[in-house]
Length: 380
Ligand code: LAC
Image (cartoon, rainbow, N blue to C red; front, side, top):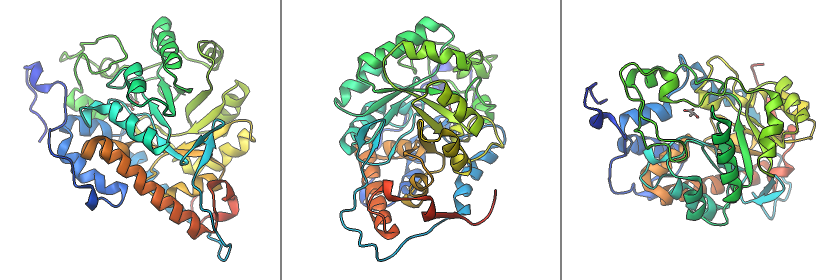
């Protein structure tokens, strides 16, 4: 049941998860198994925020269904010994070609929030992209898991000085890349955010100035204000000048923008529809990946997110030219179920699925997958 609308702010704020014993991980054999027990633990308003999409949410379902148009083409009798799921991402080794995509407020899934996520990602040797709108500070997340591969997702704030300070703090704390989200000039129209009058509390966003916007007449842009509507390609040089770390542009869906990204010096292009949370009726990333890889022509790395739950959705990505894939919601579910141990278990499942998947494809490494290993059976 959703909490009733009330004039008592305290009863509607924080949306903290239930304190319950962790889920028995022995029963979790695929990432989707985390979803139902996570939902029991996460506050209904937080669940609606995490799970929701933009407008009528066609893109949420379409992104999951897009994989149905692809078929893997395994090769047999290739003598696949030495299966190795490791890869390099931005020139450094990663134990898996899958990382944790940025998502707001891990503290709504588990009280340890991004601290637990960071520890699990670091133990797994995977990249963890920490959101500007994290529940814990940039520095605390870094300190929780020294040595981890960590990127900072940037929402440009209205005050450039505030934005610059975030970037400088991330670089100083050892975040190795800046992941600028470019598909949020304004927040997508989100019915549930409006209905619930989403407000996780004035202190929810550890890296941003304190905000207290819970008022009956607050609008979308006050509730989740990450807009950067004035941003243009010409701002990228300035943003890059703030820290000597690679720049990843996340939220690209067209070959035209992928070309512009490369021309403006992006080190990587991240193909994404923002978890279906922004504009509805846009493409699933996997549907536009090949065209974007062709447009980039090897001048930058290409990543993909969108509906990735299991190895058969990871394998097509390197085959079609993506260096890595990312996913967010399944890791939030895992976090809600068992904190750090849940996320660690999630990575264990993915590794097992992927190593088996590589063997079944007849390819020892993600890099040995080629376009010939995938075909499209329908759709454009
Ligand atoms: C969202 C933003 C804040 O999708 O990333 O809610």
